[in-house]
Length: 397
Image (cartoon, helix red, strand yellow):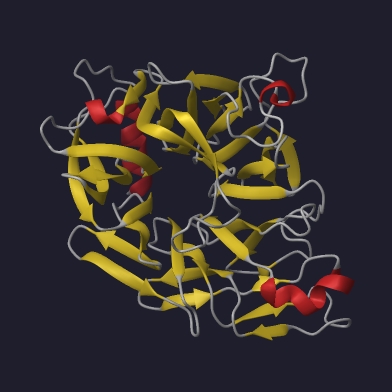
C-alpha cells in the first residue's frame, strides 16, 4: 500500500499546478522540532529532553537514560523509531578485547534509539584509535547521532580528538557497532555523517574548514564536489540530507575560502545546493536580498528546505546551548528566512506561503516528509514555538 501511495505522489508531481503553494500552520507548542516522518509524527526537544508529537496524542517526553541529565531527538523513521543523543550509563565496546576490556561508564554521551512500546535504549559507543592512549578516556569521548533509516541504521559522528581525529559512525540493529574506527576506518581527515537512505547510502562531509561533501555506499567514498570553477581546491561543501531517490542537499561555498574566510566559515559566501543521484551539483541560489543560504533537508519528491539570510554562524561540535547534544549538520547555520525550493517554483520564502494575519514569523526549518509537510521553529505573537506546515491541495513540484 505504501509503495502504491508513493507512486501516486510521484505521478502527481508531474502535473502542473497553477495556484500558489499555500500551507496551513499548526502550533506545536513550546517545542523545537528536528524531524518528521511520513505519518506526521514529529520529534524534537524541550528543556533538555527529547519529545515526540502526534496529532491525536500531542507531546510526549521520551525520557532520559539511567543516571543521565539530558536527551536530544535528531531523527525519526516511518516505523516511529527515534534516534538522538543522551548521556547516562553505557558501555564502550572495545575494538580489541584481548588488549582492553569493554568499559562500563556511569556518564557516557551516546546515541540512543526510542522504540514505541519499549522506550529509550542507549547504544553505547565503540573505542576509537589510537587505542594505546585513548582506552582510559573512552568514557569521556562523546558520540552524536544524526539520522536513522527504515532498516534501523543509525549514523552520526564523534567529537574531535586533539583537533585532528574525528569519525563518522554507523550502528545497525542487526550488527551493532561494526568497525573499530567507526564507519570508514580513516583517522584523517575528519568525517561527519549527516543523512542515511534506506539503501544504506550515507552523506556528510569529509574534513572541517576545507571540508568536502561526501557520499558513502558499501564503504566506498565519493567526493560530491563544490560550486568552484573547476580550477580551485579551496572551496568547501557539506551534504546534510539524502532522499530515497539518491538526491542529496546541503551547501557549498561560492568563492575561495583562502581569500574570503581565513580562519573559519563565518563570513564565507555559500549557497544551498542539490546533488542529483549521479552526483551533478546545482546552485539553488538565495531569497531576494540575501547573500547566503544552506539546505537542511530534502523530501522524497526532491523538494529542498533550508534557510536564506545574511548571517552565518559556526556551531560548536555537538553543542547547541540547550540540550548540549544537537548535531551540527556540517557545522554551520544560516540565520534568516526559511525557504522551500522545487524545480517548478524555484526558491520561495515560506513566510509568504502561510495565511496572512496568523501572527506567525517562521525562523527556521528542519524536516520535510513525503507529503510535503514541514516542521521548524518560529514566533507567534512574540512567543517562540514549534510549527507544522501542511500543504493545501496539490503542489507544483
